[in-house]
Amino acid sequence: MLLHYFTGTLLPAAFATCVLACSPLYALASDVAPETAEPTWKLSGFGTLGVVHSNSKNADFSSSILRASGAGASGAWSPNVDSRLGAQLDVSQGAWSGVLQVISEQRLDGSYQPLVEWANIKYQLTPDLAVRAGRIALPVFLGAESRKVGYTIPWVRTPVEVYGALPISSSDGVDATWRWSTGAVRHATQVFSGSTDQDLGNGLQIDAENILGLSHSIDYGPLTVRLSAARARLNTAIAADLFAGLRMFGPQGQMLAERYAIVDKRVTMISAGASYDPGAWFVTAETGRTRTDSLLGSGTSVYVGAGWRQGAFTPYLGYAQIRSDVSTTDPGLSLQGLPPPLAAGAAQLNGALNAVLATIPVQTTWSTGVRWDVASDLALKLQFEQVRPRGGSRGTLINPTPLFRSDRTINVTSVALDFVF
Image (tube, rainbow, N blue to C red; front, top):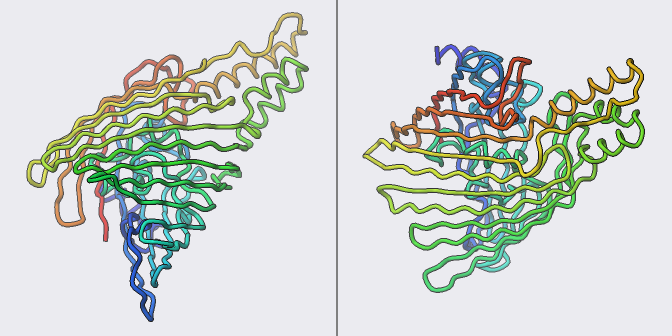
C-alpha cells in the first residue's frame, strides 16, 4: 500500500524535479569564514515520504490549511499531508555567503510545483553580527528554520495547532542577527523586516506587507529558549464573493464585510518556546497568540511534548490545543422586514459567513508515537493522534462535508520516512 502511494502518486510528480538537499541550519553561521580565492559550494537535501490515515469521512486531516487535500473526506489514506522534497544550495566566500532552498509539497491547486523557500545573501560584518537580504525564514517558533525538515524533529510534523497559526514560513526583506554571551549563556537577537506575496494556487494569493519583528534565542547547556514578536498587514481575496454579497444589503452588510474581510488588516503574533534536551530524554513546549480583526480570528495555542531515547528508538507523547479568543459564529444580516426573496438570499449569506467563521480553529490533540533511527540520516516514524475540533469549529481540518460535526474525536495514524543528505 505505501509503495503504491510513493511510486504511483508522489515520485512521478514534481518531486522528481527537486534535487535532494540538506539541513537549513547553515543559513546562520556564527563565525566569519576565512578569505578564500574560490567560493565554497555545498548541495544537500531533505525530504519526507509519508502516508496518513483518518477515520473521518466528513473532513480532511491536514498539516496545513494551504493543502488541497488530506486524509479523510478525500480518501481514508493520503500521501499529501506530510510528503515533500527539498533542495538547498549553500555558497560562501570570506565574509559573504548565500543560500537557495527549493521545496516541493502539495499546494492548494493540488500540484507539487516546487517553490523557492529561501534565497538570500548574508554578510558577516563582525564575528558576532550578520545581515541578510532576500527571501528569509520568518524566525517565529523554535523550529522556524527547520519546520519543513522532518528529520530534525522527533514527531511526524510540527504541531498544527501552533505552527498552523503561521502558514507563511518566509518573507522577502532584510534581517540582522547579533550573537552575544553572558557567562555560559549564549544569546542571538534578530530583527527582521519584509513582505511576502505568496501564490496559494487556485487563483488565490496572500499579501503580507510591512512585516516587522524581533526574535531572541537563548542557549544554556541543554536548554534552548526562543521568544518572538511580529506584526504585518494582510490582504487576500479569500471569500471575496461572500463580502460582495453582504455589501449589497446596505450598512449592516457593509459593517460585516469590513469586520471580516482580509483587506489591509493588521495582524500581530507573539510566541514563546523552550526545549530541554540533556540527551537521554527531552521535553519541548511552545505557545503562541495571534490577533487580527478579520475572519482569521484571534487565538491562543500551546503544545507540550516529551520523549525518551532508547538506543535507536524514541517513544514520545504530546498534547496540543488551540482556542479562539473571538466568537466562531455571527448572527449576520437581520432578516426582519425583508421581502421573502431578499430574506432567502440574506439567510444564504449568513450561512456562508458562519461556514467561513467555523474555519477559526478550536481544537485539542493528544498524540503518541515512536521514532526509529534506521540509519544515519534516516528515520522512520509511526504516530497516532486523537484530534477533536470543538465549539462548532472545524479546527485545523479542511474540506468539510455538509455532514461534518464539531466536538467529535477523529483518529489519525501517520507513517513517515524522513531523510537528509
